[in-house]
Amino acid sequence: MRRFLARLAHDRELFFGVTILGVIVFLALFGRLLWPLDPLRVDILNSLMPPSPEHPMGTDDVGRDVFARFIQGAQVSIGVAIGVTIAGTLIGGTLGLLAGLVGGWFDAVISRVMDAILAFPPLILAMAVAIGLGPGVVSAAIGVILAAIPWYFRLLRSEVLRLRTLMYVESAQALGASNLRLIRLHILPQTTSTIFIQASSVFSFSILTLAALGFVGLGIQPPVPEWGTMITEGLAFALTGQWWLGFFPGLGIFMLAVSANLIADRLRDIYDPKSGARLSI
Image (cartoon, rainbow, N blue to C red; front, top):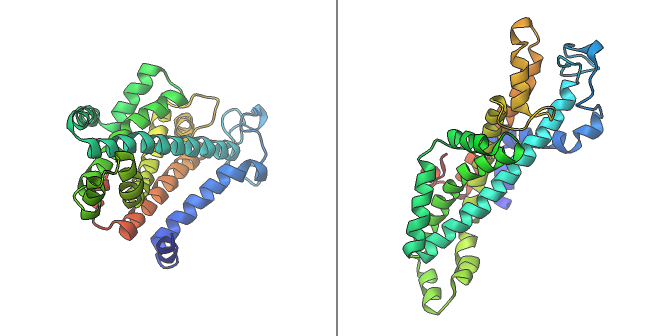
């Protein structure tokens, strides 16, 4: 943490990424207190109003405040992305740790399953899961988690295989340390920074994939505000001058993804500068 804070004071790109992410997270957490309008409130008389002091991001085709919907969309996108990132870390990371340490048939079987999942492009896999389970936030989250698990698995498995060859790990194993003790005391502490770096990249991927699923109608369903769905709704009015309907949610997706990627890149430079190829998505 000290290295991160020291780098934050001098690295403009890292500072920019943390600032943008912090602003969006702040809006997601406290935006409803600062702007208490109901994002689902219909006001036909004020439909398609351009940005103004009363409606900083304008209104949509049924008079709903776009800024209020933007705030709730941030809550939904960030909440689901955090859940996806944590679930992918726990499932994929645990499988990778066990496969690298146990080896044998367990490693062979899990590795083949992960290779089969990686054979599909991540977005196509997430779309297929969402179609199979039906549109909705749960199916979208499951699809993104399934696409993210192999990244953690391969990363942690390779790290464990590398750490197993180190002298102190071999000594602990020779003294009879159990696999759980090896992971808890000797392996996991050495991989924590790598996990956080990958989690930053997966968070960005989750934001983009959830927006893409919402854009094609497979993600979070209306009337719940979600940035990808809001862009889809705004396309119908893009050619008639109501640019704000799709612009602001698209800007939110862009800024959130860019900030997460900047943070991931800088964390990689700080903690694991030789791992760029392994951590790429």
